[in-house]
Amino acid sequence: MITADTGEICIQIFTAVGVPTSTPGFDIAWVPDGVSGRFTTGPLQSGLPGELIDAVQVPAWFGQAMKMLGLCVLILGMIGWVLSPSMRGRRRGFQFAVSGLVLTVLGIAFVPFQKLITYVLNG
Image (tube, rainbow, N blue to C red; front, side, top):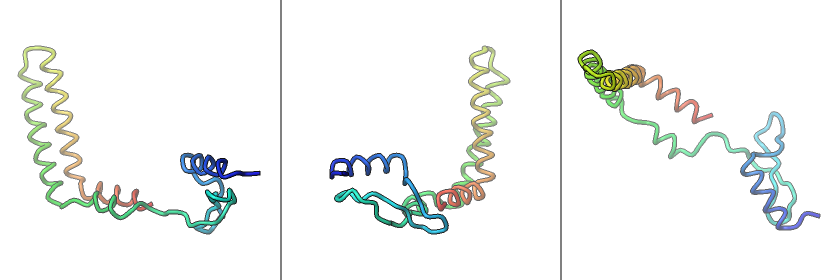
């Protein structure tokens, strides 16, 4: 016999692990009822709330600014890497240059990257 305490434990386990079973071809899942401990049908959540998807949407100028900042960081890192007399300074300059390169690449491909993130979050 499933008691209310057992039902609450099942809900916590199923919330942490996921829905135990689903009906193929339908957006319905069998989820435990917290009060009686019986399994009832409920809709599966598809996608994420609109607030999270809206948070990913940023203006297009952000990509242009990221590209320009990345180019500046790349140039400064290359200068530090080439002109530093110490090994530690060269390592820092190299890390700076690689960070600038990553920012530049993300800035150049910002719009497709943003569309990819939105597509992944929409599910």
